[in-house]
Every structure is written in structure tokens, then in C-alpha cells.
Length: 55
Image 1 (tube, rainbow, N blue to C red):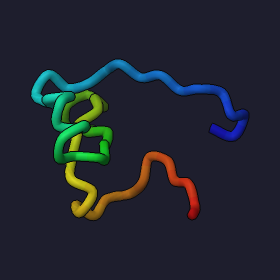
Image 2: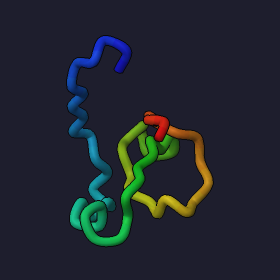
Image 3: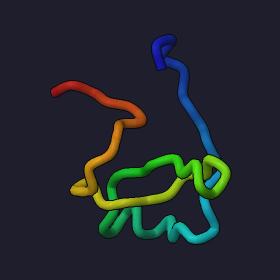
Image 4: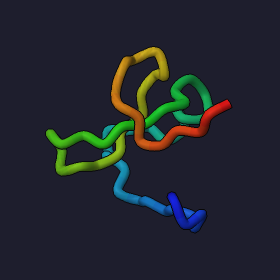
């Protein structure tokens, strides 16, 4: 965020296994199809970014 405040979001899709984030999926996306809930995905899936840090 531009103001450097921490962002917390808890609306994970029930179909997302949060453990996957730590094991095989390092990226997330917000799915319009399921009410804008977070889903985990592989970083090799090409999508728009949620946040980005250069370098």
C-alpha cells in the first residue's frame, strides 16, 4: 500500500487450501466469479498482479 500500512484480508475461498501457499503456490488472485474471494495459484499462471515489488 502506498502509505506502508499492513494489509490484512481474510476472505479466502473455502476451496483454497491455505497450506498450498506454503507448499506449492506462492501467488494469489481475487476471483470475481466467487464473490471476490482470494484463491491460491501457481505463480506460473499469467494474471494481473495484486501487488508488486521491484527487485
